[in-house]
Length: 155
Image (cartoon, rainbow, N blue to C red):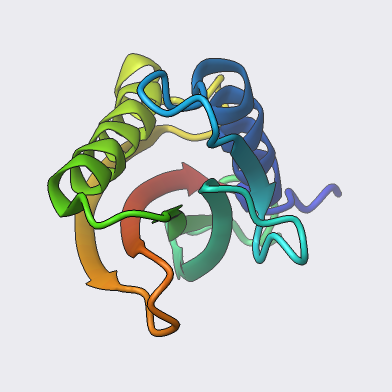
């Protein structure tokens, strides 16, 4: 008997690959580059960072399968995508608009193929937050956006 694995690792890889292929550096600011990464970017911190990170997962019975094999459980989880932007100026609206655009572009990736390449039965963006502030070291503006993507799969 084969026990199916969680789809979460493959979904993270799918989102990373799609964001890497479809998101582009800010056309209005040629000095800023874009990094798509898993989790924390480490020391490489360009002006635009899109991080495919946290997975919060719940597992429940789906069907009564005596063996506990395929189809017995369903998993629902949320993938958190964090968009972290920095600009060395004080144009709060411009950096907010860039963050909102990136959030919308990641949403579009999910909405274009809600099965995420056939990895899940359903996925959808469920919430986002965008918060900006003046950098604590008085170097410019910092905006942090989070996008939650809900996924559902039977395993």
